[in-house]
Image (cartoon, one colour):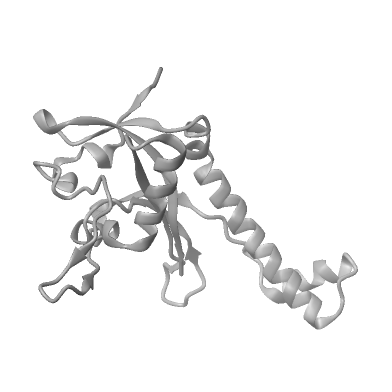
Length: 194
């Protein structure tokens, strides 16, 4: 028995298109008139094709790949650059390139925590902990910041992992008379951090 999920982006007819033309369910290989392979939307790429093949092998041909993207971009919100925020967004890779270029194709998740300490301030605490060599201080600082980022990402993706832990999920895609219910396996396609 399945529970059907309705993601707001997947039932938005502006994003998916009136006839689902902006959403890719399957991979496709495109060639130009000279027989040269072309790449367009994400479903024409090798990652989509290989991922889809693995999903079909494990879960059957009726299961589609749902490519999930995470975007994070540190931003300064004051003129001096002293105040920074780190917004996190999620998007669906199955949309066309044009849709994915739109801000409407991103869902705001929250802000990644940032340490409000300078390297010098952290170094004082590291020295108290016995980390004293300069290369160790730099590496410890870098590792701590990366750890905080990774823990945040883990918290963001945990509900998606939990939802699909037992296999594919049913998702509603489209709107009105073009709404379809399909099986999907969520896959994290990319993590973009600036």
